Image 1: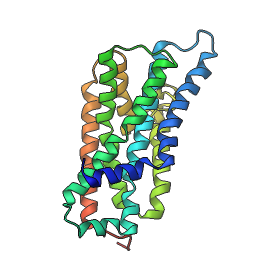
Image 2: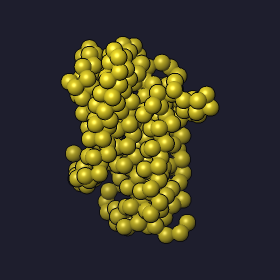
Image 3: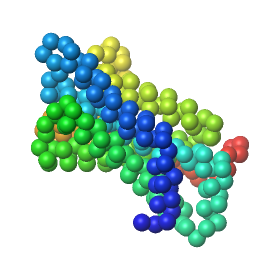
Image 4: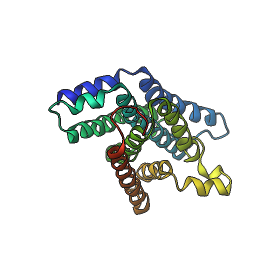
Length: 246
């Protein structure tokens, strides 16, 4: 483990907001949504419990990915990126560390919410299905790591914090993570299907149902990841390393 990676991981991991909003809150939502519906006649089916679990795994991972990477805006404002530029650490290593930290920090919400689904709500999947579900959602979180890097380079420090909260809410609410898209009006259902969060959860639902992700969700998620990464690179080349105008 490189010293820079260890430093960045400790730096983000000590953030209590990360623990609350990306691990504790999705786990609590998993219990809340299923227990509310459990009060209805017949309770919550295995399919509903699994779907809720997948949605909350996706919600937590999205928040973790964006929260871990949008801090680039704060690093530019503080001069940390400029300081790194004069060290022997290559810029490619700095970017690789940011990506690795973002990807690694999506694992806790995925594992914790999966544990809640299994041991609290009784979701039963085979060992291969559990591994596949966590693996697919972990790899899919690269989309939101790339989006967070784009926001971190594009936004100034004062705008980044509010933007990440708004964007996470939009991706969750309108992407069908809090309420199934089947309950949306027709216009909102169509809009949900242009959001990466919808297809991210859809890939997870395919695995939880005992299958493999369909080609369409995987292709769209790959396209989103490539587009966000390309835009992030383009913006990074034009942005100053401190939060000055431009």
